[in-house]
Image (tube, rainbow over all chains, first blue to last red; front, top):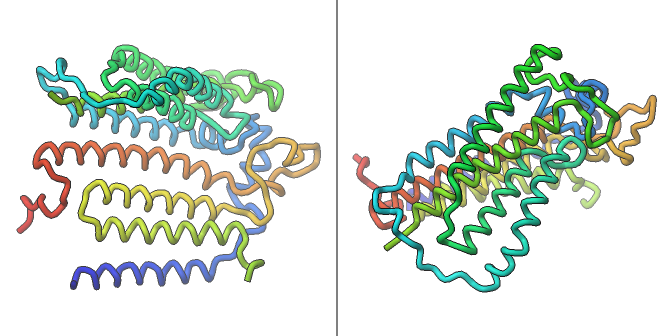
Length: 232
Length: 127
């Protein structure tokens, strides 16, 4: 009883704070400060049509590197937690899959993978990018695992894709120091025609590596979950 | 009343409501999976809040295309919303995903240890 009262108290204090914040909120009518610089100079400095991408990959590229590292850390901790014991290899999952799911997955998985690749390769032009594309690819892997619970994904491929794309991301970043203005500067390659597929310098390359890395990491996490729920 | 509710305000209301619902779930639920769902809702609410704080009245998405009118002499910054919160939220979504995946792994470990997900049963550290 006391606990319920405390919870109600905490929530009502929060709601009161939110109400105050809401009633003093006014919609902004113009961009200020840094955002104004990004908006007015972003197109000519970075050359990407999607300004969010130019912020993520170039202006705040170091932040993205940290983000990818955090994902890697999560995948490592999960592999550590859900370690396989000896004898787990022979176990199988005895769960029925619906025929609808199996048939649909055969049709959909290649399309989902292709869509994921399209999304991360066009990250500089359309509302997409490495993280979104990688997540879409992992959705395909999730569908694959749901349709065939006993499928065994190839570890080596996942690990190699993950390692190579992570290392290439850093190498391209370091190349930026020598060929352009600094770490992860995208002007090491020609900026190209604004709005073209091959434009915005290194952004499509960096984002493709990010997409591959995120896709591989999420697939790795899903694979670990699948392995650790084997029974009998 | 209706002209009062423009996009920024709607985002703010939804964000605040989701934060409250998520917080309530975290505080009151007994099942670990439900607590994790509460954290997910809380996370979504904060993301929606952050994106709607970057809203600029009557402006469009920060992607320079025909809708933004990229002609010479036309200032892009006059026709788009703030791109910075959107970039930050993209980061936050990925971190939120990582946290959720980790919590689910913990939940699996806890279930394997005690064969239950009831949080009151895990009282080994209680004093």
